[in-house]
Image 1 (spheres, helix red, strand yellow):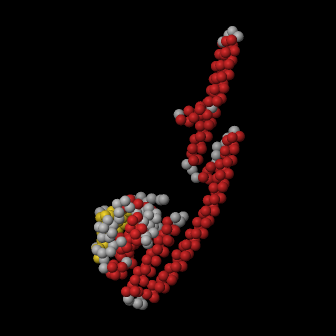
Image 2 (image 1 turned 45 degrees about the vertical axis):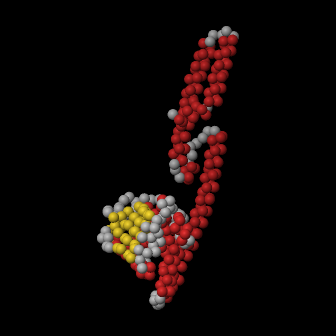
Image 3 (image 1 turned 90 degrees about the horizontal axis):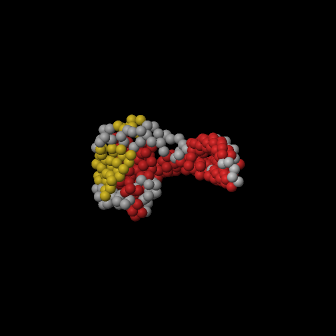
Length: 329
């Protein structure tokens, strides 16, 4: 109904002119005292013929409107398959649309090439920088002093930042290396704990962890990355106390710390890209990318990640690992 109202409104000028001409003929016949039937019958006949052609034209316009509406929901390339037109104005508009599509295709190709070159450069850089990191780690293993342990922690932080860069690049790649299968959650958690074991010892933080004895459907590498990021944040913002790793039914992995917590106004936005909040701005080192990556990875894996926190009392990050349909971004 909306289309027909718009169609009549679009053709109101022609309809008004037809009615005006009919009224003029009718007035002329009346003024000259001619039989009114002589104008009524031709007017009625012309009206019927006009309505027939108007209906046929309206049906054709409706089909074109329907086709164009379908094309709007399709990819840009399908805009080249526009319905035929019979007016000069329509042809001009179609040529304009096709020119815009061609320009968009050129810009898209250029942007894709630039993005591919950037991806290649940073991927190579991330892999190359791992070589000196590994060499430095081997050299530090020969010493066992407070200074060497501090350097090892700093080196581990650098390595973690490199992994974040690789994760950031891979998330938007056309191809992924997900291997979704049944995983032993304890093996993933223990792997993350081992990476940060020296920090627990040096900071004298207590780790509360008992075997979870559960398997989950996920990707080992990407889920391990998420657990490491959450554990790293817990260590970063916990000066004293403990970090507890436990499982809530049915399969919700929780990592709770006794750190500085998160302000109530920051809590809804901690998973946004680049958002650091009050604590991050105070720390001067936070990038606001870690939890954002965790959120996107969990979405890709079909998991959900949430946070509960209270300032000066600690934070609990929960990762719901219950099997569900995987989401594609």
